[in-house]
Length: 272
Image (cartoon, rainbow, N blue to C red; front, side, top):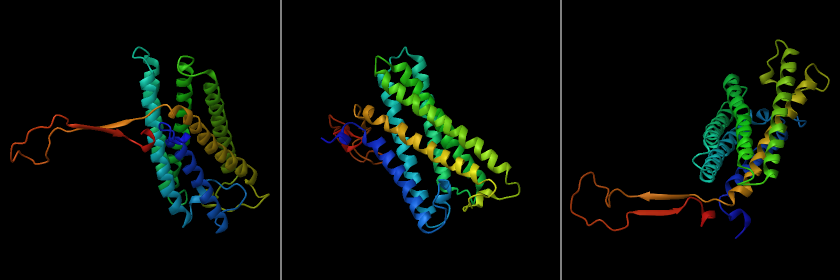
């Protein structure tokens, strides 16, 4: 059995690889078609103009789905490893799931509402994705803190803590530089500005803001990498519990109920 077939670790692996491929593919396409500048464009800018925006939307929606699945498995794993009397962990676990799914929903908004069409909705999606997503990382870091040393060692907590600091530092840097950029360009429609000239007003804050956005996205990807080892130790199974042995609205004839009316199978092939 290959390492990615162990448990459900294929989920965070797929999430990381697919999301990374989304960013790289759209960047290359946008640069080749000269829709953006090669030097650190915003991630959203690489998915603003057709045809890359069409692919960007589809691929980011898939990333959101993989994120929902990954966060649910994480929730179930923590739930199974937590004693009933540990109410603090249970509350953090539920909060993490809500924040994670909200962040994934924000990713769908970002994917389907480009900044040049509906900037407000795109901004809302970005806040949900990155802002709420950062809170998800914070909550999961706290979960890791409270689960040591009886579930895992201190090292995984320190790794997630470091990534959390990286995430919030990127958010602060992006926010401050964006405020400076917008304030230095009064009357300019920055949302539609896809090309920048070195030395022009607002260029340096723009570069810092764009670098911070890429750094923020990379911190999210890095955080989900920390789930791979944990997910090698869990599988989920779906059980079909039949309430009847036929699908008629009313009984047309008498059928003897078989002794086994349920079926259980792994959710993913990796769990076999």
